[in-house]
Length: 241
Image (tube, rainbow, N blue to C red; front, side, top):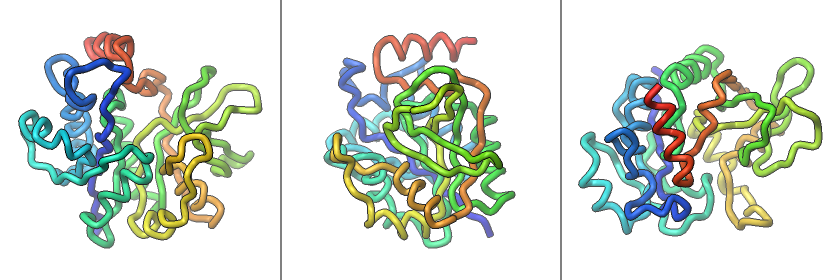
């Protein structure tokens, strides 16, 4: 029986947002960002199992705000998205697939998430990611495909060396636990940041001919991550529409 658990990466403090609370607990339209994300994940997965990877210094803040039961994992020092995921692995049962979400990507739609989950199940994918095509550059992993549409490259912080449109990985991703375990200890820190990334797991899986699937959204609003006061204002305006 297919089992899916959600892991939400929520350890960021959001210094650029200049908030008095951790970034995931900043409110948009009366609800914290983490609550927006949890609700969408529960809708898409038809499950109410979630692990939040947080900075342990702020566990009390999360407990006081959250109205649904979750399990906590802890990332004390920001060492990248793959490191954050690694902190949750021992809380995930063998055979469970993992939906990874990001606490600041509040504009990912329920429909996109539901389509992502459906695609993962229908094609029995090892990894399934959400992406979008655009004429603009974003600070996300660049996705490249061959003429048949197969994913051949998936690189964090890659500057495109070809003309647009470009395809970027924009956040939610589903991975089989066994795939994560196969590669996570082999990851090398990024030369410029010293961090390890989930995108590198995908890149290794591509090299090993794993079954990599991607759902492409046509809604560029979903690209927006809330990192600055300007982002927050934009997100509030979009949610109102």
